[in-house]
Length: 220
Ligand SMILES: O=C(O)c1ccccc1NCC(=O)[C@H](O)[C@H](O)COP(=O)(O)O
Image (cartoon, rainbow, N blue to C red):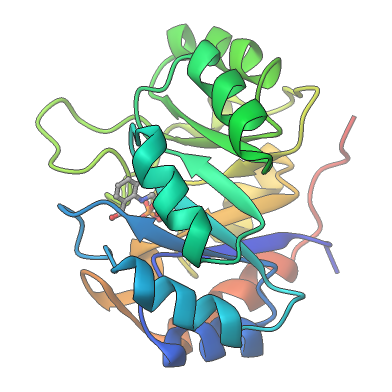
């Protein structure tokens, strides 16, 4: 069985957390982005985080957050990592790491070969990379769009930091995604929902089973 670590992003209710834990997820994500159907108030994230088991890593997803928002979130929510899902520069990633003392995962959108150098750049400053589909120009959200990119673009490539594959993953395609890319970590949001922002426990369980039930290609 492949040792694939799964992150379920956009949890909003105690039932979502229970479903992620029962399925064997390694990480959960809380979205702090008002335009998102997965956005939750800081107080809700705190309640979910304090009751979740310590073995489940808690990640706050923010988009171009200023220091005031980060300070507010961190003052209330016990977290293990920050996920930066906006247009944060490498300098801003460095600053947030230094200022807030938490590991930082930087999301990088990929659509074509031209996007790949950014992965190397952010690998120098972030603790982890989230390799996601680049959102379409007219997209309302910078992520969580259920859109996949061409996994062949990253097949066989490696970076000096841990990375997660994201974008349009579902219980139906995650085995192929892992096999093709060799991803050791996988992130999903809309692919385990019954409607935008509504997580489906059966799809969460099926997703983790499918992600872990395949042999991935050898990691170099
Ligand atoms: O999920 C959101 O609503 C969201 C809002 C703003 C920035 C990022 C957002 N989501 C990111 C993710 O949940 C995932 O990390 C990733 O983009 C994959 O999403 P999906 O294609 O829905 O599985």
